[in-house]
Length: 149
Image (tube, rainbow, N blue to C red):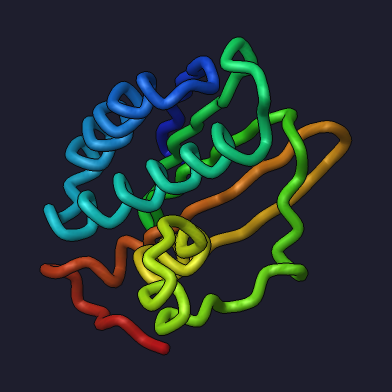
């Protein structure tokens, strides 16, 4: 059970991403996370929301819900939408050489989120999609446990 939970709902449009980043940053600071962890969380959340805006919805009036949950073990951000579902089993790690060679943008969102967060989970229940991004607090600098594989 989270010690604290905070929610935000935004329209599915890129101009609202700054509001999401500030919301997440505020609660990460309140949770006493380090600056590097906060930067990683903000980037992963931004990427998840941008993917929803680009791939799940065709209408900026649709909503994205962001829920921050904090407890003694972890800082978790749940991002929910009712758009087209993402199926992680169909995702394969991108070929970075080909992306660089073709000079096209995009295609790295899932890899970015997975590299920045300790845990990334995708769930669909009913008409709701959820991406859950978790940073374990024990792995933060100043804590007694180090990052493990």
